[in-house]
Length: 188
Image (cartoon, rainbow, N blue to C red; front, side):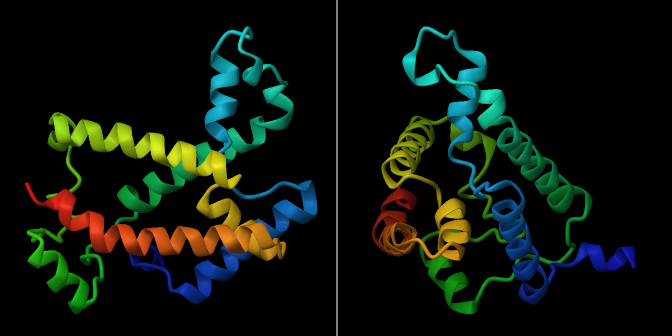
């Protein structure tokens, strides 16, 4: 039985479970699944109260969400380290060939080592990508009124038109970025 936990769960198990979590949050507590507001809650908990944007009762409105985000981190550790699959991550032959054409050859871990390693953070390019990417993600989630999980799971389940527009924009931007930006980032 424990051996089953060391293999990826199929979509027809994880999809309904995720749907049940999102629906339960909406029905039980009128809460929406999403994590982009956690940074504001964390800043409100840590920073002095002289910043108007952080003057609110974060324990009443955001404590549950911070606990939820902590659960994501703990669950990710359990799933990615303690219950890690011995199999390499399944990548289509086309994606494998495309990435190999861009110089990515190590597919042993969850993500290619050429792209994601601690040494990359110590370079100017890596630092700029992390800081720039973090800024763009923060700006994008603030501008879109939520993150991909909030819009894509809860917003679509709640039949919100702005969430549908945001999800279409997320996927279009991701496709364009992987087609045009990824080759630029990997060169050099």
